[in-house]
Image (cartoon, rainbow, N blue to C red; front, side, top):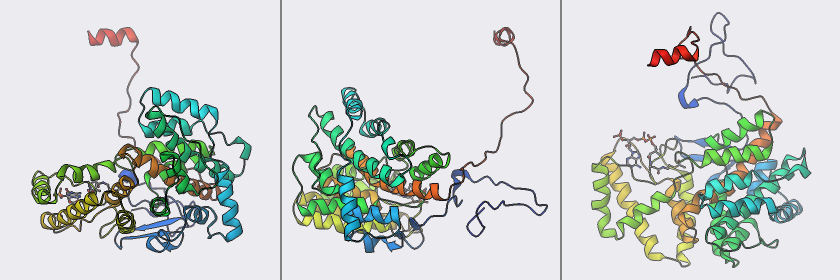
Length: 400
Ligand code: ACO
C-alpha cells in the first residue's frame, strides 16, 4: 500500500535505487489522495467525524446552514455570521430563465430526475462572483434545491413553486415540493437527513469534484461532474430498493420466509451491509432516530412498524447466514424510510441526497483550491506494442 499520509506534500515514493515506483491499486482502495479537515470515516470503529464533531453529536443539533458554514469555514458561525449566511442562501434561490427552459425540455422528454439535475446544474451562471468560491458555492447550493423541486412539478405537468426567502434551506425545499410550508417536525427531519449525508470522506463524487477543481476548472463543472458520479448505483443511485423490499413483504408475518428465501438464493438485502463500515453505520443510527421521531408524530405508522420488524428479522437472519460478518443496517434503509415519510417519491431520493452532498463537494473544492496540486495518477499500460500501420485497402483485403 502506498500512503502519502506521513510524507510531506508531493513526496515521491522511491525504491532502494531512488527510482520512482508506482504501484497499481485497483479502485484506488487504501490510497490516500488528499489531506482534509472536512470529514473522516473510520469503518472499523463505525465512526464518522464531520469537521471535528462526531456525526451523532452534530447532525441532530445543527441547522443545515450551520453545518454548511462549519464545512466551508472550519468553525461554527456566531449569530451575525449565521444570519448573514442564511440571507445569502435565501437570496440566491431563484432560477435563471435558461435553467428553467432546460428543465422544461427535460420534463417534456421524461428525463430521469438525476439527469435533469445534471443538465440544469450545467446552466448555473456564477460569473458575477468570479474569484469568490464561497459566494459561488452559496449560489450553486441554493439553486440546486430549487432545480430539484421545480423538476418534481414539471414532471407532473405542473408549474414549479417559487422559493421563499423567509424559510431555511430544508423548510424551503419542502415548501417548494409541497406548496405548503412544512411543520417544524418535518423541516427538522429533513434537516437531520441533509446534515447526515453532507460529507463522507473521499467518496467517488467528492473525489470527482476535487479532480475537476485540481485542473483549474470552475465550481459549476466540479458540481456537474460530481452529480454524474453520485448518480451511479454503486454510489448514491439506489436508495429506493431498500423500501421496495419492505413494500414487497407487506406484512410482518411474511418477513422471515421472504428474507430467508433471498438469503438462500444468495441475493443481497438492500439497506444492509457496507464496504467501509464493518461494525455499524453511524448515519443509520442518526437517521433511525430521526425517522422514529418523524413517524411518532404521524404519517404511515403501519409502514414504520413493518419496516422496523423487517429490519429486526433481516439482522437476525444475516447474523445466521453470515456469522463471520457483522452485517448491519446501512444509511440507505433509513434514508428511504425518512424521505418516504416526508412524502418524497423514490425517484427524488438521490436528487435530495445531491442537494445536501453538494455542500460537501463545494467544501472540498475550496479545500482543494487552497492546497492545489493537479490530481493526475498513472495507468499501467497492458496493451500490445510494436503494431504496424496498414492502409485501408490492405485492412479490407485482409478481412475479406
Ligand atoms: N445481504 C445479503 N448478504 C450480504 C449483504 C446483504 N446486504 N451484504 C453482504 N452480504 C454477504 C455477501 O454476499 C458476502 O457473502 P459471500 O462471502 O457468501 O459471497 C458476505 O456478506 C461478505 O460481504 P462484504 O464483504 O461485507 O460485502 P461487500 O463489501 O462486498 O459489499 C455492500 C458491501 C455492496 C454494501 C453489500 O453489503 C451490499 O450489497 N448491500 C446491499 C446493497 C446496499 O444496501 N447498498 C447501499 C450501501 S450504503 C452506501 O453505499 C451509501
